[in-house]
Length: 315
Image (cartoon, rainbow, N blue to C red; front, side, top):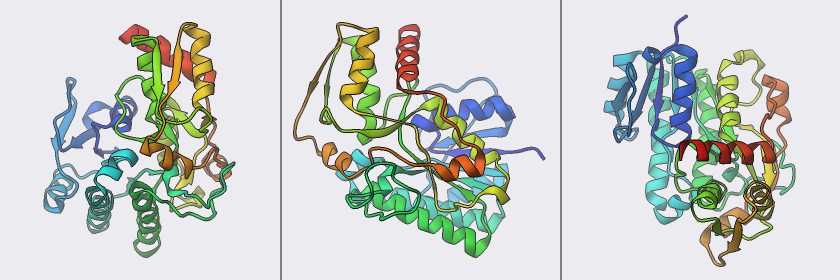
């Protein structure tokens, strides 16, 4: 059966690269990207439709027009931005999801992907090798909305049989798109600044370990999950996904191996530190490995090398 895929929130960090990968897999005519703003570039044969996920009528008409078999809902307000606009973050992250879930049930859409985050964990969650099931007490509006979204996803699967799939993304690192207001964004900025100025002032403390993942791995994991047979999936809230955990000190050390003159400094009192302190330092992802054969490819050294090579080549 031919797949027709709509990506909502396609202009963001993950959406941009996911769209490229899905076009390569299914063909440009089968992928419809959508966002509230026009994309900066649109290639030949690429289809874009403007839509606001908070406008249910507009959304339904988009789905009726293209009759998608799969929806990727990536429209969201991230952690640091969400703390500045908590009401807007809740509205976008929750009502956008509810609109998609309701229309998907009504129109019998085959498969939905919605990303969760390590932000669902909180101060009382285990910090090291955080398991799939544990105490979850997020203290950011982003984390609270993602945890509520996980419960809704499982509810819609159990009540309506909706095939919705999800990953709790760690921090995502990419050279292709600028970061979008997340707590883990230092790990992207640091590479841009290392090449531009040779120095970086980090807004997290030197020993703050956080789970991260290179974009290539994140995209591959997402498509792998969506390709997995439904009967293999035992998690309908959201899968833990482990990447590589490191501190600002460790990433700076890796960059210095390639750029020996790089200098790192630290800024105290940034509100993102409070968010980071409540998140896991490392993740355990046995269910993803067992249910859909997940395996990481990029460790910290491979990621740093690839980031710098690509930024030099494309900068």
